[in-house]
Length: 115
Length: 111
Image (cartoon, rainbow over all chains, first blue to last red; front, side, top):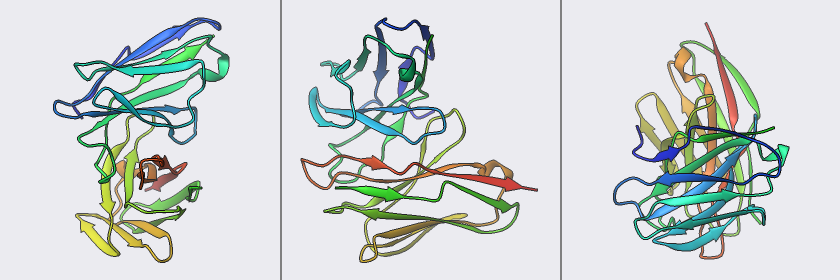
């Protein structure tokens, strides 16, 4: 158990819908990262927050948005869903901003299926 | 830009040794991570190298050559449970850069 929690574990929805994925980082970790992993593909970095502020942006679509709240939990919002958005979405947390190469701890992931 | 290359798949025999290579091209450098990921599960941290050389941690060792942009993960005394994907990743080196992961090497262990 990494200490990072994600809800829900599974999500099945239809095209065009909007969903929210939730992540709680390990106690004391200030950075939260979101990743997308499609079937048999590598991890695609989406976005990072550090202590409530956006720190880095990766290949995140405009239909996707995220935020980190004062209690440091984070939410990833996916809207106008398409079939290709079906994937495992991982959240990870680390102590620092990542410049020092801090190890990331990954949550169990949310498996999103868009029908 | 940044780029990471790893072999897509490898197969090895239980009890043997396997080396998984990773090459990277980045404008700056702030170390390199190796993560293990079993199918359908979250990645878990294996190692972090920032200086050249070999770091050993039990059955797993990781090597880095910064001048060659090259790292490898060495797994000894392979066990069936080592069947997994192995991801190398390069963390950001500046405020303008971001972490990138290689696409992973899927390692299959045969009895």
